[in-house]
Image 1 (cartoon, rainbow, N blue to C red):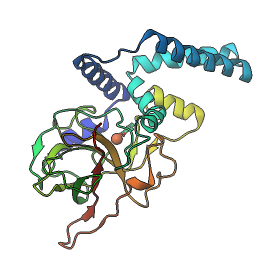
Image 2 (cartoon, rainbow, N blue to C red; image 1 turned 180 degrees about the vertical axis):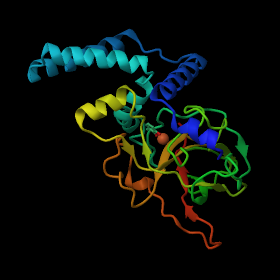
Image 3 (cartoon, rainbow, N blue to C red; image 1 turned 30 degrees about the vertical axis):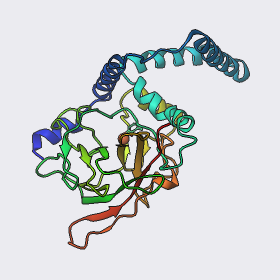
Image 4 (cartoon, rainbow, N blue to C red; image 1 turned 120 degrees about the vertical axis):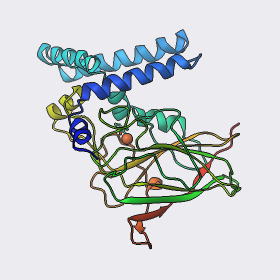
Length: 290
Ligand code: MBD
Ligand code: FE
């Protein structure tokens, strides 16, 4: 990594990542023809419940004008910093994911978070993720198989992986990183196997200098997520799986700010017998579509 890129990267501001996350989300919704359409009756029901829940809090907690105005100012700032995607994905998406995937038989999934991008570079089944020549971090080999719930391998399954770099930044959201850095799409081989070469991600702090950081500080919370690898795994005729995988011993497994850790999503890295970094194995099991 050059001095220049590390300098730019560490100067990433919450508002830059927020603006990028908001813009990418808007693009994705615009690309889905049916995106965002919820029928009137359902909007009435859900919006009425949400408004009532907030009013109940005000009445039960005897909320003052000072508190109301602090809340109003903070909501305005969430918008200004582009942090609605971050706020929602950290504090609400885990419940939506729980509802969506309650009856999956195969792999447990977890939240997508705000930093996914479609269309990352294609990598052979045993290839290396796009990264800088001197990408900081422990070399990490991640292999496994993609199968159906009946045990049959899924050759040609696609695995999209994205993760933060050693400083906790995601390409295309923080400045100063090459496009698609630490993002790639693998195609499983004829046995459904894959072997991904990357570097081990570091624990991750959500941006602290924006509206979400302001809330965390005002409430005396912390901003940490455990180190994680994000995946989307898909094969024709099967439900797409969105998951994250975590590392044992991480300080924030029990108190992930995004509430997205599950015991089924733990890796077990071992020293690589070749002496360079670590290896780990994990299989993905996909549910049939019906
Ligand atoms: C992340 O990297 C992330 O995965 C989530 C869920 C929220 C904020 C940043
Ligand atoms: Fe993440």
